Length: 482
Ligand code: C2O
Ligand code: CU
Image 1: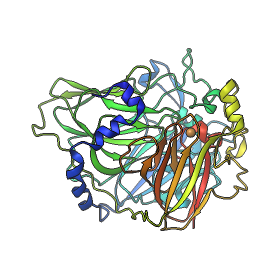
Image 2 (image 1 turned 90 degrees about the horizontal axis):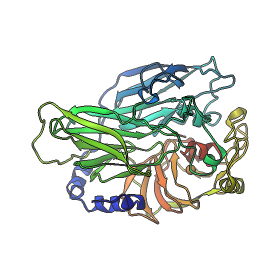
Image 3 (image 1 turned 180 degrees about the vertical axis):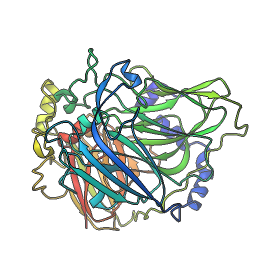
Image 4 (image 1 turned 90 degrees about the vertical axis):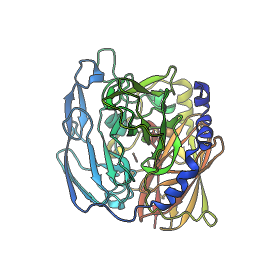
């Protein structure tokens, strides 16, 4: 059994997983089950109206807060589509502040650069009162999400997030599927929002929320079929939190990371930075009993959600998770890949503020630019002037293989995200990691990780830390694919 200390050390869970029996048998299945064709061809039309909506989520304990959301509803929008369908989105910007521009970024999707939703880099942002459109066919199955890409610390903090699920990866359907969106809220004692950013937070691990939630509720109890295999799509959509999730006592396997199927790994625990997702197959408890999902990455383990079994048992067979079907990704040519180093560091200002604290937090001026920077990639801090973005951090040739050497020279963790691509995690200087694909990879303090990248569609692709205050305070740049 893992102790909390093992979990904090970060490697025990992976070591345990790598030795587990599921791996060997599943490899074959994985190689066989590549998704050859789309499973549908329709069009899914979505109309969003970005606006302030006073909302009383269960986790607010009776208070109503001025959330900013994509549409009205009890929690966050979840768009479900089948692989091959086109998504047509029109959105109106009715955010209630002068100059509050918006665009929608589709996190994790390898779609054309013009649809990527990054203000100034891939499109002009939409001013209040304006209307924007996106149209694309998501090329991959998986658990994705969407969010705006300017003033994101506040936007996430006010709830402006949604999930996008592309179906078509299951060999046999599970007995039920549950989407869990984890995020904290930053409320003061009076129940109003606190400032979303602080200097101290921005220069350290991010400014933490005060109330935790999953799907807008505190430790929700979710009714599930008994002794069944259910699929859980777990999202960390907090602006800064790092979590390490695990069940107290249950048979479960990780079947996908950031939407990418992998040979099922025994699920002991998994560490997620903000924006990271994991798909889990869980054998639920017998009738009347329940299984709890914990976050171990905190002083005391926190119950994120409880799965309570109801009804007659569905299964009596042994728990043998099937792998998901995978997309036919271009193969990394590791032998001939060019190695590109990226150093993630603090700036002298960031270092000074981490030492003394205090201050108003990250303030964004017009054009989504922070006034001061605390973080850098290869010694350069975003923003430069958006009207003159400066050179890319690297130029890649479409179709060619690269190895990014991601070197964290800070005492903080950084979930590093690339737009329009997936990383293939190759190795870490500090931990034993399985080989897997992801669009956001967590660098723990002073860790170096190598990831493979096959350059995808041409364009300018953002590359940044997904701790939103780090991103806004300089740990952001772009890669150009030609
Ligand atoms: Cu979630 Cu630049 O992205
Ligand atoms: Cu960071």
